[in-house]
Image (cartoon, rainbow, N blue to C red):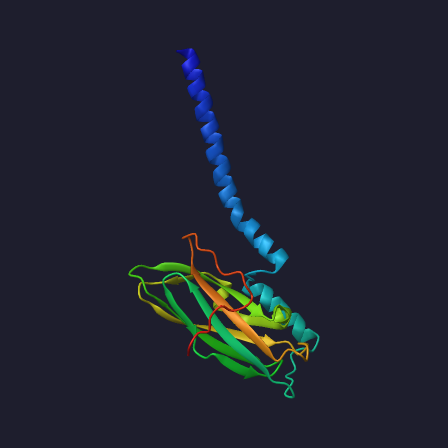
Length: 197
């Protein structure tokens, strides 16, 4: 009997170690995913404070002046991965580099229960990413939507005056997805569908 008990103890110990390792691996996936995204520049979720630092340093070097001689068309795109109706209130705006601009996105939760969600931004062309500074954005934090709630969510941004002259159009695209259901956001910087206004 002692041989069977020892074998049972060994199996239980191995199962316990495997369970702890699996939990640790799952727990470590979130920071690993964020680090990988930051290194590759894909689906980068930047905190509001990080954008605030960029905006302040840009102002210190004089990039906050509005260039009225240039007009850049900003197109707005939306994708949803989950039980949402998600779209911008306008499909595009024409802005001057250095000019503070606001666009509003609207989301509706189609479910009879509350939902935790997150938005991930992407840009086209990719080279415009470093010249697109968001000062306020619903993508800075997770959103909790009540059952059948409609919410208007603003994005305040500035296009840096250093944007290359050949860039005439920038597309800002958001993928809005439900958290905790194993659905991954789109990783492409090229929008997949245009939202209608």
